[in-house]
Image (cartoon, one colour):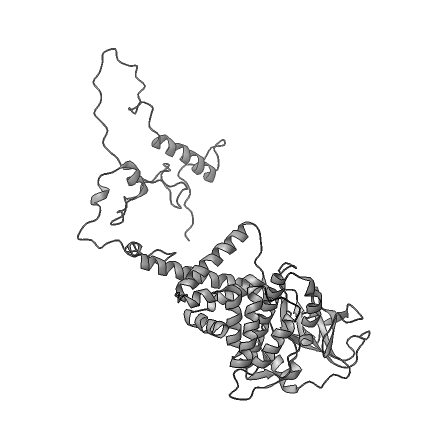
Length: 466
Protein backbone atom coordinates (compact mmCIF):
# COMPACT_ATOMS: atom_id res chain seq x y z
CA UNK A 1 0.00 0.00 0.00
CA UNK A 2 1.22 3.57 -0.71
CA UNK A 3 2.05 5.98 2.10
CA UNK A 4 -0.48 8.56 3.14
CA UNK A 5 0.11 12.05 1.69
CA UNK A 6 0.41 14.90 4.22
CA UNK A 7 -2.62 17.17 4.55
CA UNK A 8 -2.56 20.51 2.82
CA UNK A 9 -3.35 22.36 6.06
CA UNK A 10 -1.97 21.58 9.47
CA UNK A 11 -4.53 21.44 12.29
CA UNK A 12 -4.44 23.97 14.98
CA UNK A 13 -3.95 23.42 18.67
CA UNK A 14 -7.64 23.10 19.40
CA UNK A 15 -8.38 21.10 16.28
CA UNK A 16 -9.16 17.39 16.81
CA UNK A 17 -6.97 14.78 15.25
CA UNK A 18 -7.39 13.71 11.64
CA UNK A 19 -9.55 10.68 12.28
CA UNK A 20 -11.81 12.40 14.75
CA UNK A 21 -12.16 15.48 12.58
CA UNK A 22 -13.05 13.49 9.53
CA UNK A 23 -15.54 11.38 11.40
CA UNK A 24 -17.53 13.93 13.32
CA UNK A 25 -17.40 16.94 11.00
CA UNK A 26 -18.31 14.75 8.06
CA UNK A 27 -21.38 13.30 9.75
CA UNK A 28 -22.62 16.74 10.70
CA UNK A 29 -22.00 18.16 7.25
CA UNK A 30 -23.76 15.26 5.57
CA UNK A 31 -26.74 15.65 7.87
CA UNK A 32 -26.90 19.39 7.05
CA UNK A 33 -26.99 18.65 3.35
CA UNK A 34 -29.51 15.83 3.63
CA UNK A 35 -32.10 17.48 5.93
CA UNK A 36 -34.20 20.19 4.19
CA UNK A 37 -35.31 23.32 5.93
CA UNK A 38 -38.73 23.48 7.49
CA UNK A 39 -40.22 25.60 4.74
CA UNK A 40 -38.43 23.68 2.00
CA UNK A 41 -37.10 27.02 0.66
CA UNK A 42 -33.57 28.35 0.16
CA UNK A 43 -32.20 29.92 3.31
CA UNK A 44 -31.39 33.70 3.25
CA UNK A 45 -30.15 36.19 5.76
CA UNK A 46 -32.06 39.17 4.23
CA UNK A 47 -35.18 40.46 6.01
CA UNK A 48 -38.48 39.45 4.47
CA UNK A 49 -39.85 41.85 1.87
CA UNK A 50 -42.96 43.85 2.59
CA UNK A 51 -44.42 43.27 -0.83
CA UNK A 52 -45.73 39.82 -1.55
CA UNK A 53 -43.43 37.97 -3.87
CA UNK A 54 -44.46 35.16 -6.20
CA UNK A 55 -43.55 31.68 -5.13
CA UNK A 56 -40.30 30.38 -6.57
CA UNK A 57 -40.52 27.69 -9.20
CA UNK A 58 -40.36 24.10 -7.91
CA UNK A 59 -36.91 22.70 -7.47
CA UNK A 60 -35.81 20.16 -10.02
CA UNK A 61 -35.50 16.56 -8.90
CA UNK A 62 -32.00 15.71 -7.88
CA UNK A 63 -30.37 12.43 -7.15
CA UNK A 64 -28.57 12.28 -3.83
CA UNK A 65 -25.08 10.99 -4.14
CA UNK A 66 -23.29 8.88 -1.58
CA UNK A 67 -20.50 10.35 0.50
CA UNK A 68 -17.45 8.88 2.11
CA UNK A 69 -17.76 8.64 5.88
CA UNK A 70 -14.03 8.16 6.23
CA UNK A 71 -11.25 10.02 4.41
CA UNK A 72 -9.48 8.42 1.49
CA UNK A 73 -5.73 7.88 1.44
CA UNK A 74 -5.08 10.74 -1.00
CA UNK A 75 -7.52 13.43 0.12
CA UNK A 76 -5.97 16.69 -1.08
CA UNK A 77 -9.16 18.75 -0.79
CA UNK A 78 -10.51 20.01 2.56
CA UNK A 79 -13.98 18.91 1.51
CA UNK A 80 -14.86 15.56 3.12
CA UNK A 81 -17.66 14.64 0.70
CA UNK A 82 -16.75 13.22 -2.64
CA UNK A 83 -19.43 12.28 -5.13
CA UNK A 84 -19.28 8.96 -6.92
CA UNK A 85 -20.47 8.59 -10.50
CA UNK A 86 -24.08 7.40 -10.57
CA UNK A 87 -24.31 3.61 -10.73
CA UNK A 88 -26.34 1.94 -13.39
CA UNK A 89 -29.28 0.17 -11.73
CA UNK A 90 -29.59 -3.58 -12.10
CA UNK A 91 -31.68 -4.48 -15.07
CA UNK A 92 -35.16 -5.52 -14.01
CA UNK A 93 -34.67 -4.59 -10.35
CA UNK A 94 -35.62 -1.63 -8.20
CA UNK A 95 -33.54 -0.11 -5.46
CA UNK A 96 -34.98 0.64 -2.06
CA UNK A 97 -34.84 4.40 -2.60
CA UNK A 98 -36.66 4.15 -5.91
CA UNK A 99 -39.43 1.98 -4.50
CA UNK A 100 -39.98 4.30 -1.56
CA UNK A 101 -39.99 7.43 -3.72
CA UNK A 102 -42.49 5.93 -6.15
CA UNK A 103 -40.39 6.74 -9.19
CA UNK A 104 -42.45 5.94 -12.26
CA UNK A 105 -39.26 5.22 -14.21
CA UNK A 106 -38.64 1.96 -12.34
CA UNK A 107 -41.24 0.13 -14.36
CA UNK A 108 -39.37 0.86 -17.58
CA UNK A 109 -35.90 0.10 -16.18
CA UNK A 110 -35.61 -3.19 -18.07
CA UNK A 111 -34.70 -2.70 -21.66
CA UNK A 112 -35.60 -5.33 -24.27
CA UNK A 113 -32.08 -5.11 -25.65
CA UNK A 114 -30.46 -6.07 -22.33
CA UNK A 115 -30.39 -9.60 -20.82
CA UNK A 116 -32.80 -10.42 -17.97
CA UNK A 117 -31.74 -10.44 -14.32
CA UNK A 118 -30.10 -13.79 -13.66
CA UNK A 119 -27.53 -13.39 -10.88
CA UNK A 120 -27.53 -16.39 -8.55
CA UNK A 121 -28.42 -16.10 -4.90
CA UNK A 122 -25.33 -16.93 -2.89
CA UNK A 123 -27.29 -18.63 -0.14
CA UNK A 124 -29.79 -20.75 -2.04
CA UNK A 125 -28.30 -20.88 -5.51
CA UNK A 126 -31.55 -19.63 -7.04
CA UNK A 127 -32.05 -17.22 -9.91
CA UNK A 128 -34.98 -14.87 -10.33
CA UNK A 129 -36.56 -17.26 -12.81
CA UNK A 130 -36.23 -20.15 -10.32
CA UNK A 131 -38.35 -18.28 -7.78
CA UNK A 132 -41.32 -18.62 -10.13
CA UNK A 133 -41.01 -22.42 -10.13
CA UNK A 134 -41.96 -24.20 -6.88
CA UNK A 135 -40.05 -27.30 -7.94
CA UNK A 136 -36.77 -25.38 -8.09
CA UNK A 137 -37.44 -23.72 -4.72
CA UNK A 138 -38.26 -27.05 -3.08
CA UNK A 139 -35.13 -28.65 -4.51
CA UNK A 140 -32.96 -25.81 -3.22
CA UNK A 141 -34.50 -25.96 0.25
CA UNK A 142 -34.11 -29.72 0.36
CA UNK A 143 -30.43 -29.48 -0.59
CA UNK A 144 -29.73 -26.81 2.03
CA UNK A 145 -31.63 -28.79 4.63
CA UNK A 146 -29.59 -31.92 3.99
CA UNK A 147 -26.39 -29.90 3.97
CA UNK A 148 -27.30 -28.37 7.34
CA UNK A 149 -28.05 -31.75 8.91
CA UNK A 150 -24.72 -33.09 7.69
CA UNK A 151 -22.96 -30.12 9.26
CA UNK A 152 -24.75 -30.71 12.58
CA UNK A 153 -23.87 -34.41 12.43
CA UNK A 154 -20.19 -33.63 11.76
CA UNK A 155 -19.98 -31.15 14.64
CA UNK A 156 -21.65 -33.53 17.06
CA UNK A 157 -19.34 -36.34 15.91
CA UNK A 158 -16.32 -34.12 16.61
CA UNK A 159 -17.60 -33.33 20.09
CA UNK A 160 -18.58 -36.88 20.97
CA UNK A 161 -15.40 -38.46 19.62
CA UNK A 162 -13.04 -35.56 20.26
CA UNK A 163 -10.43 -35.26 22.97
CA UNK A 164 -8.92 -38.67 22.28
CA UNK A 165 -5.41 -39.00 23.68
CA UNK A 166 -2.67 -39.74 21.22
CA UNK A 167 -0.35 -42.74 21.36
CA UNK A 168 1.89 -43.20 24.37
CA UNK A 169 5.55 -42.20 24.19
CA UNK A 170 8.58 -43.13 26.31
CA UNK A 171 8.67 -39.68 27.94
CA UNK A 172 5.13 -40.03 29.32
CA UNK A 173 4.61 -40.54 33.02
CA UNK A 174 1.76 -42.50 34.63
CA UNK A 175 -0.05 -42.32 37.95
CA UNK A 176 -2.46 -44.93 39.24
CA UNK A 177 -5.67 -43.43 40.62
CA UNK A 178 -7.28 -46.46 42.25
CA UNK A 179 -5.90 -49.73 43.55
CA UNK A 180 -9.16 -51.52 42.75
CA UNK A 181 -10.66 -51.92 39.26
CA UNK A 182 -13.37 -49.51 38.17
CA UNK A 183 -15.05 -52.15 35.98
CA UNK A 184 -14.79 -55.93 35.78
CA UNK A 185 -15.81 -57.33 32.41
CA UNK A 186 -16.02 -60.95 31.33
CA UNK A 187 -12.31 -61.34 30.65
CA UNK A 188 -10.59 -58.12 31.80
CA UNK A 189 -10.16 -55.74 34.74
CA UNK A 190 -10.00 -51.99 34.12
CA UNK A 191 -7.97 -49.62 36.32
CA UNK A 192 -8.07 -45.85 36.08
CA UNK A 193 -4.78 -44.00 35.65
CA UNK A 194 -3.47 -40.65 34.45
CA UNK A 195 -0.90 -40.13 31.72
CA UNK A 196 1.21 -37.03 32.34
CA UNK A 197 3.44 -35.12 29.93
CA UNK A 198 4.71 -31.73 31.09
CA UNK A 199 1.48 -29.84 31.96
CA UNK A 200 -0.88 -32.02 29.91
CA UNK A 201 -2.62 -35.07 31.30
CA UNK A 202 -5.17 -37.61 30.05
CA UNK A 203 -7.40 -40.04 31.89
CA UNK A 204 -6.88 -43.58 30.60
CA UNK A 205 -7.67 -47.12 31.68
CA UNK A 206 -5.33 -50.08 31.99
CA UNK A 207 -6.89 -53.24 30.54
CA UNK A 208 -5.60 -56.15 32.61
CA UNK A 209 -6.52 -59.74 31.59
CA UNK A 210 -8.40 -61.62 34.28
CA UNK A 211 -6.62 -64.61 35.80
CA UNK A 212 -7.73 -67.81 34.09
CA UNK A 213 -9.27 -65.98 31.11
CA UNK A 214 -8.98 -67.46 27.65
CA UNK A 215 -5.87 -66.49 25.72
CA UNK A 216 -6.83 -63.68 23.28
CA UNK A 217 -6.51 -64.33 19.58
CA UNK A 218 -3.56 -62.33 18.17
CA UNK A 219 -5.35 -61.66 14.87
CA UNK A 220 -8.12 -59.75 16.62
CA UNK A 221 -5.66 -57.72 18.72
CA UNK A 222 -3.71 -56.76 15.62
CA UNK A 223 -6.95 -55.67 13.96
CA UNK A 224 -7.82 -53.51 16.96
CA UNK A 225 -4.49 -51.70 16.69
CA UNK A 226 -4.88 -51.08 12.94
CA UNK A 227 -8.47 -49.75 12.98
CA UNK A 228 -9.22 -46.07 12.66
CA UNK A 229 -11.12 -44.47 15.57
CA UNK A 230 -14.74 -45.60 15.69
CA UNK A 231 -17.40 -44.38 18.09
CA UNK A 232 -18.40 -47.90 19.17
CA UNK A 233 -15.05 -49.70 19.07
CA UNK A 234 -12.58 -49.61 21.95
CA UNK A 235 -9.49 -47.61 21.03
CA UNK A 236 -5.96 -48.41 22.16
CA UNK A 237 -3.34 -45.82 23.18
CA UNK A 238 -0.39 -48.18 23.57
CA UNK A 239 1.17 -50.52 26.09
CA UNK A 240 2.16 -49.86 29.67
CA UNK A 241 5.52 -51.55 30.17
CA UNK A 242 6.20 -53.71 33.15
CA UNK A 243 7.57 -51.72 36.09
CA UNK A 244 6.17 -48.36 34.91
CA UNK A 245 3.82 -48.37 37.93
CA UNK A 246 5.52 -50.04 40.89
CA UNK A 247 2.31 -49.81 42.95
CA UNK A 248 0.18 -51.50 40.28
CA UNK A 249 -1.78 -54.57 41.51
CA UNK A 250 -0.90 -56.50 38.33
CA UNK A 251 2.24 -57.84 36.76
CA UNK A 252 3.46 -57.74 33.21
CA UNK A 253 2.74 -55.47 30.28
CA UNK A 254 -0.89 -54.32 29.87
CA UNK A 255 -2.81 -52.40 27.20
CA UNK A 256 -3.96 -48.81 27.70
CA UNK A 257 -7.39 -47.82 26.35
CA UNK A 258 -8.63 -44.32 25.59
CA UNK A 259 -12.12 -44.64 27.13
CA UNK A 260 -12.59 -45.37 30.82
CA UNK A 261 -15.60 -47.72 31.15
CA UNK A 262 -18.22 -47.19 33.82
CA UNK A 263 -20.07 -50.52 33.72
CA UNK A 264 -20.93 -53.40 31.44
CA UNK A 265 -24.22 -53.94 29.63
CA UNK A 266 -24.88 -56.91 31.92
CA UNK A 267 -24.53 -54.67 34.97
CA UNK A 268 -26.70 -51.98 33.40
CA UNK A 269 -29.42 -54.53 32.70
CA UNK A 270 -29.64 -55.33 36.42
CA UNK A 271 -29.84 -51.64 37.40
CA UNK A 272 -32.29 -50.61 34.63
CA UNK A 273 -35.04 -53.02 35.65
CA UNK A 274 -36.91 -50.27 37.54
CA UNK A 275 -37.13 -47.92 34.55
CA UNK A 276 -40.48 -47.31 32.82
CA UNK A 277 -41.07 -49.67 29.88
CA UNK A 278 -40.95 -46.88 27.28
CA UNK A 279 -37.62 -45.53 28.52
CA UNK A 280 -36.14 -48.98 29.00
CA UNK A 281 -37.04 -50.35 25.57
CA UNK A 282 -35.87 -47.17 23.83
CA UNK A 283 -32.48 -47.38 25.57
CA UNK A 284 -32.22 -51.05 24.60
CA UNK A 285 -32.88 -50.15 20.97
CA UNK A 286 -30.23 -47.40 21.07
CA UNK A 287 -27.68 -49.81 22.55
CA UNK A 288 -28.46 -52.43 19.91
CA UNK A 289 -28.14 -49.76 17.23
CA UNK A 290 -24.63 -48.89 18.43
CA UNK A 291 -23.69 -52.57 18.64
CA UNK A 292 -24.86 -53.09 15.07
CA UNK A 293 -22.67 -50.17 13.97
CA UNK A 294 -19.64 -51.77 15.64
CA UNK A 295 -20.36 -55.15 14.04
CA UNK A 296 -20.88 -53.45 10.69
CA UNK A 297 -17.34 -52.06 10.88
CA UNK A 298 -15.97 -55.53 11.72
CA UNK A 299 -17.82 -57.12 8.80
CA UNK A 300 -16.48 -54.44 6.49
CA UNK A 301 -12.95 -55.37 7.64
CA UNK A 302 -13.55 -59.05 6.93
CA UNK A 303 -13.81 -59.90 10.64
CA UNK A 304 -16.37 -61.53 12.90
CA UNK A 305 -16.88 -61.75 16.65
CA UNK A 306 -16.95 -65.37 17.77
CA UNK A 307 -18.67 -64.74 21.12
CA UNK A 308 -21.10 -61.90 21.70
CA UNK A 309 -21.66 -61.55 25.44
CA UNK A 310 -23.26 -58.79 27.50
CA UNK A 311 -20.45 -58.82 30.09
CA UNK A 312 -17.90 -57.88 27.40
CA UNK A 313 -19.88 -54.88 26.11
CA UNK A 314 -18.82 -51.71 27.93
CA UNK A 315 -20.76 -48.51 28.59
CA UNK A 316 -19.20 -45.04 28.74
CA UNK A 317 -20.71 -41.61 29.34
CA UNK A 318 -20.63 -39.67 26.02
CA UNK A 319 -18.43 -36.59 26.06
CA UNK A 320 -20.31 -33.33 26.46
CA UNK A 321 -23.72 -34.96 27.01
CA UNK A 322 -26.14 -34.92 29.90
CA UNK A 323 -25.88 -37.78 32.36
CA UNK A 324 -29.55 -38.61 31.86
CA UNK A 325 -29.09 -39.47 28.19
CA UNK A 326 -28.35 -42.87 26.69
CA UNK A 327 -24.84 -44.27 27.26
CA UNK A 328 -22.20 -44.95 24.65
CA UNK A 329 -21.56 -48.61 23.89
CA UNK A 330 -18.06 -49.98 23.22
CA UNK A 331 -17.22 -53.35 21.73
CA UNK A 332 -14.01 -54.31 23.56
CA UNK A 333 -13.74 -58.09 23.12
CA UNK A 334 -11.20 -58.10 20.28
CA UNK A 335 -9.58 -61.21 21.72
CA UNK A 336 -12.50 -63.22 20.26
CA UNK A 337 -12.42 -61.57 16.83
CA UNK A 338 -11.56 -63.93 13.97
CA UNK A 339 -11.37 -63.63 10.18
CA UNK A 340 -14.87 -63.85 8.69
CA UNK A 341 -15.43 -66.83 6.42
CA UNK A 342 -16.33 -65.84 2.85
CA UNK A 343 -19.97 -65.90 1.80
CA UNK A 344 -21.40 -65.20 5.27
CA UNK A 345 -22.95 -61.68 5.21
CA UNK A 346 -25.18 -62.33 8.22
CA UNK A 347 -22.63 -64.04 10.42
CA UNK A 348 -23.69 -62.04 13.51
CA UNK A 349 -27.47 -62.34 12.93
CA UNK A 350 -28.08 -65.39 15.11
CA UNK A 351 -26.06 -63.99 18.02
CA UNK A 352 -27.81 -60.63 17.71
CA UNK A 353 -31.23 -62.29 17.81
CA UNK A 354 -30.30 -64.08 21.01
CA UNK A 355 -28.95 -60.84 22.49
CA UNK A 356 -32.21 -59.03 21.64
CA UNK A 357 -34.24 -61.46 23.71
CA UNK A 358 -31.67 -61.46 26.50
CA UNK A 359 -31.89 -57.69 26.81
CA UNK A 360 -35.67 -57.54 26.69
CA UNK A 361 -36.07 -60.37 29.17
CA UNK A 362 -39.25 -62.31 29.94
CA UNK A 363 -40.49 -59.85 32.55
CA UNK A 364 -40.75 -56.80 30.28
CA UNK A 365 -44.26 -56.30 28.85
CA UNK A 366 -44.49 -55.84 25.11
CA UNK A 367 -46.86 -52.88 25.43
CA UNK A 368 -44.61 -50.35 23.68
CA UNK A 369 -44.23 -50.19 19.90
CA UNK A 370 -40.43 -50.30 20.21
CA UNK A 371 -40.55 -53.50 22.28
CA UNK A 372 -42.91 -55.16 19.81
CA UNK A 373 -40.63 -54.10 16.94
CA UNK A 374 -37.56 -55.50 18.72
CA UNK A 375 -39.29 -58.84 19.22
CA UNK A 376 -40.27 -59.00 15.59
CA UNK A 377 -36.76 -58.03 14.46
CA UNK A 378 -35.23 -60.70 16.71
CA UNK A 379 -37.34 -63.32 14.95
CA UNK A 380 -36.34 -61.93 11.55
CA UNK A 381 -32.63 -62.10 12.44
CA UNK A 382 -32.74 -65.84 13.00
CA UNK A 383 -34.86 -66.39 9.88
CA UNK A 384 -33.39 -64.03 7.26
CA UNK A 385 -29.80 -63.69 8.54
CA UNK A 386 -29.31 -60.06 7.47
CA UNK A 387 -26.00 -58.25 7.64
CA UNK A 388 -25.17 -55.90 10.51
CA UNK A 389 -25.64 -52.92 8.18
CA UNK A 390 -29.18 -53.96 7.29
CA UNK A 391 -29.93 -54.68 10.94
CA UNK A 392 -28.77 -51.18 11.85
CA UNK A 393 -31.07 -49.68 9.19
CA UNK A 394 -34.02 -51.61 10.60
CA UNK A 395 -33.27 -50.35 14.12
CA UNK A 396 -33.08 -46.78 12.81
CA UNK A 397 -36.49 -47.10 11.17
CA UNK A 398 -37.88 -48.63 14.37
CA UNK A 399 -36.64 -45.71 16.46
CA UNK A 400 -37.41 -42.75 14.17
CA UNK A 401 -39.85 -44.05 11.59
CA UNK A 402 -41.57 -44.54 9.31
CA UNK A 403 -43.99 -46.95 10.90
CA UNK A 404 -45.80 -49.88 9.31
CA UNK A 405 -48.86 -47.74 8.49
CA UNK A 406 -46.91 -45.73 5.95
CA UNK A 407 -45.74 -48.87 4.20
CA UNK A 408 -49.17 -50.47 4.18
CA UNK A 409 -50.70 -47.43 2.44
CA UNK A 410 -47.92 -47.16 -0.12
CA UNK A 411 -46.97 -43.59 0.78
CA UNK A 412 -43.90 -42.16 -1.00
CA UNK A 413 -40.87 -42.59 1.25
CA UNK A 414 -38.96 -39.74 -0.37
CA UNK A 415 -41.61 -37.25 0.72
CA UNK A 416 -41.58 -38.72 4.23
CA UNK A 417 -37.80 -38.26 4.43
CA UNK A 418 -38.08 -34.59 3.43
CA UNK A 419 -40.74 -33.92 6.06
CA UNK A 420 -38.81 -35.83 8.72
CA UNK A 421 -35.64 -33.87 8.04
CA UNK A 422 -37.56 -30.61 8.31
CA UNK A 423 -39.01 -31.66 11.65
CA UNK A 424 -35.57 -32.58 12.98
CA UNK A 425 -34.12 -29.21 11.95
CA UNK A 426 -36.96 -27.37 13.69
CA UNK A 427 -36.64 -29.60 16.75
CA UNK A 428 -32.92 -28.89 17.09
CA UNK A 429 -33.47 -25.16 16.56
CA UNK A 430 -36.18 -24.95 19.23
CA UNK A 431 -34.01 -26.77 21.74
CA UNK A 432 -30.98 -24.64 20.90
CA UNK A 433 -32.96 -21.46 21.59
CA UNK A 434 -33.82 -22.89 25.00
CA UNK A 435 -30.16 -23.58 25.74
CA UNK A 436 -30.32 -27.37 25.39
CA UNK A 437 -27.25 -29.15 24.05
CA UNK A 438 -27.82 -31.91 21.47
CA UNK A 439 -26.92 -35.35 22.76
CA UNK A 440 -26.09 -38.83 21.58
CA UNK A 441 -29.62 -39.64 20.43
CA UNK A 442 -29.74 -36.46 18.33
CA UNK A 443 -26.45 -37.40 16.68
CA UNK A 444 -27.69 -40.91 15.89
CA UNK A 445 -30.92 -39.51 14.44
CA UNK A 446 -28.94 -37.04 12.28
CA UNK A 447 -26.83 -39.94 11.07
CA UNK A 448 -29.94 -41.84 10.03
CA UNK A 449 -31.61 -38.99 8.16
CA UNK A 450 -28.44 -37.89 6.36
CA UNK A 451 -27.65 -41.41 5.15
CA UNK A 452 -31.16 -42.67 4.39
CA UNK A 453 -32.66 -42.85 0.92
CA UNK A 454 -36.09 -44.00 -0.18
CA UNK A 455 -34.59 -47.34 -1.28
CA UNK A 456 -32.72 -47.95 1.99
CA UNK A 457 -35.78 -47.09 4.09
CA UNK A 458 -37.92 -49.45 2.01
CA UNK A 459 -35.36 -52.25 2.55
CA UNK A 460 -35.36 -51.60 6.30
CA UNK A 461 -39.16 -51.68 6.48
CA UNK A 462 -39.26 -54.94 4.57
CA UNK A 463 -37.01 -56.55 7.17
CA UNK A 464 -39.13 -55.18 10.00
CA UNK A 465 -42.69 -55.78 8.80
CA UNK A 466 -42.70 -58.25 5.88
